[in-house]
Amino acid sequence: QVQLVESGGDLVQAGGSLRLSCRFSGPGFSSSYMGWYRQVLGKQREWVARISSGGGYSNYADSVKGRFTISRDTHENRMYLQMNSLKLEDTATYYCNQWGASDDAYWGQGTQVTVSS
Image (cartoon, rainbow, N blue to C red; front, side, top):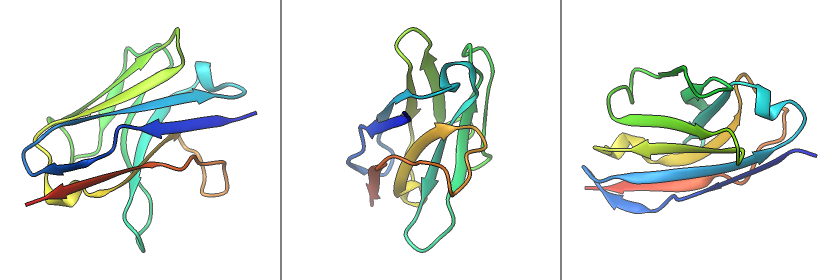
């Protein structure tokens, strides 16, 4: 059974930081690339960052490169997203899932990040 639980979202001022957490479980998840995604209401979900199964490889969308850091605890099946220098345009609901998960896949509730000026 797939389980995806995101947490850590909050209201933060521009320039501030947040750390998101994801607890995940399900067939193949521990051996898969995992990713963070975000979605603004009314817009398509977009990819933010991804990390390899062992945590040794990661890459980022251009919009967050240099500000966000993805990490993964392979023993606890948890993933994190450290977000620094937050901007207004980072406001969104953030989700975690396997890399390449389709819209039809199971998605958790997400965690809301709101950046204020």
